[in-house]
Image (cartoon, rainbow, N blue to C red):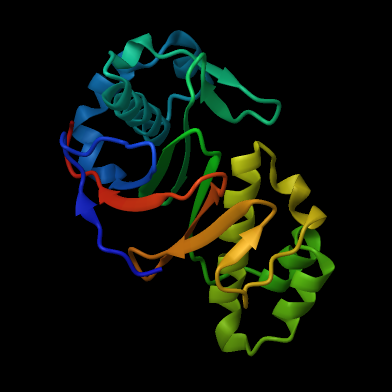
Length: 226
């Protein structure tokens, strides 16, 4: 999916029919690390003190607070069985993923959403990983591909599958429970629409959006504080 990435700013409200996909580069926000630490609660800081986690969770709080017109510190998270966070007593749904230097968020009102981004590493045994995690039909499909297509198609499948299971609040242990036919367009599975999108050659990303009502997907880059 080739999309125009607009710079996110204070005029970009999240409408009932909107899904916001927001991309940022961690390096652009390292200077505000101490400020993001102040947004996090004790549990979050104990869980992970890595700079990337602090920025990812701090900006998540900042974006949610922007949508909900509150302070980032006021937000209360609860967690599903597999660890997926959600807001307590609020129907604003979200998900995030990070790889290498990039973080991607997705936000929606009343639609389950999931997102995944991967940094495409070439020194990987794609077929061995596929045999372990993917369904039999997906693994066989990859085996039959020309070697020049293997890297891109592996990451397409992986990001589609991970975005979908994250939308459901599941983990990669459920990858073998379903198959994705990448030749379909549009690509739908069990009331979800799966879409890939691009922002740099070395990354692959996909989003899963519940199809309960029509939506308008908007793509943004976050280059500065709100």
